[in-house]
Image (cartoon, rainbow, N blue to C red; front, side, top):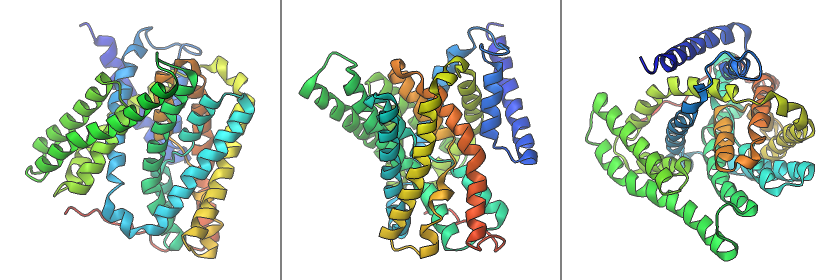
Length: 399
């Protein structure tokens, strides 16, 4: 059997993910952190448990996973939801840009490398909605702060992904990847971003039309997965951003499809195994020898991101007219960082391999923020007096 080792690896990783979920609930450590650590332990720098060719399929797993993540992010950009949550819209935009600016300047100062700083600034905007929402549910939180946190974490990753896509093109121009320079390079960058959006729209229109004519179940899953993977493949073939293309695909479906919830639930339902493999293999890729050399840069990244969250949360909530008590607490509730950040880091190192040290830095920072983020959120909710009041999640509507 030619792929016996691959099948054993996939099956074992999925079972490890199941065990990590059970252990994480007992010891209150996020599953993402456990999978990253398990992957790192199995990597070539430590126990070296996997075959030498185990990482060859990681590129495909990464693209499949991030294509689905991008599509799911697009659901959060529904015009209806954005209009109903103007306060969260303002706060999320301000937090995104302030955090990106703070991390960009801090890491540029620490390294002198503007391209790397731009990428780290874009990556820093990502949050971990699942970890944050778990805290809200488990604490039974309800109130103005809880509602704002729920709405902000639902959309800020989408803003972050858009900003990162633009910054990735800018970083590539600074480094000089490719044969184009000057105005031609700028035009190439604009065409890459614009082309990704255009491709997402072109594929999103027929997908939105078809979505309203299929019932939930296998046909819907086939349609959803088919369009998402074709979009990612065409984007890669054309030299475009598959993350931005799939996100635009999701935005079009979310806004134009008659039954827009169904395709997102279909993709969400099959994404779990891919995410488990993705987190484990991301840990496997960790270069332990690079970690000691990233001390100052890692500290600058973590401190600047914390400062950006606090400052952006306060400024955004002031501009949005939030309650005074919410203004001082919202930033601390937006610290967790997980899968989207790792995905953006992998896209960055895949596109610009000379900046490969970004991946171990983001993995280390992700572990830090996944450990300290949820407790910080819980502390702020308790201080606001919103815990134990019966958490209520806005139900999805299938129009």
